[in-house]
Image (cartoon, rainbow, N blue to C red; front, top):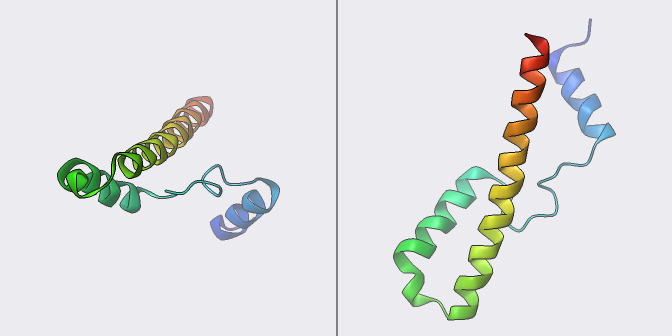
Length: 78
């Protein structure tokens, strides 16, 4: 029987991570950048704020779709 590590490695080798091409690619970074945008955004130019906002929206879209996919797969196991 394959271990969880083996399964994860096999899955990763067969598929491209949807986060790989994102500027913000994980939750901790997203939280830090959201804090920066909300509470220190006045220290950025309008273009920088817009760029950061769009990067956060792209991350959130991928993260939400990942959660929807996970939920769907868990329901199929039930």
